[in-house]
Length: 112
Image (cartoon, rainbow, N blue to C red; front, side, top):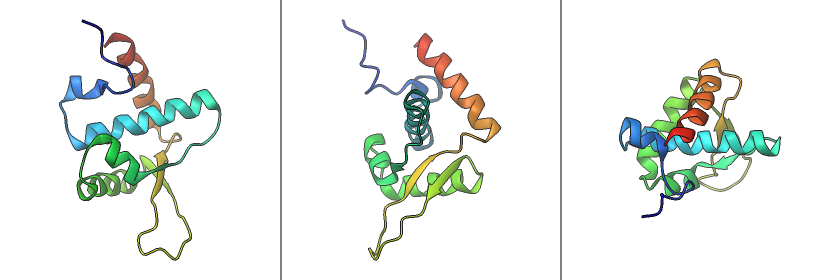
């Protein structure tokens, strides 16, 4: 039996259970690691994040709003005339808790 693909498997759900919060957080953590590798800021469309996590956008929006309120996530406002403009987000890499989460996530990936 071959090991699960690192890209498609959620590591944190193995530890904390499969919840909307955990899946969204892991996708944002993966984005933060990609930012470190590429050396540039990478904004992600939240609709795409919800789709990747296989969660309803309404459930994901509730989680996103909580993360924004607690300053764990930054949002880039897109000026547009669209009725529902895209929500571009990324982890707030300046937040001390986020720094520790990224460190923890790197460690967990090495063990699972």
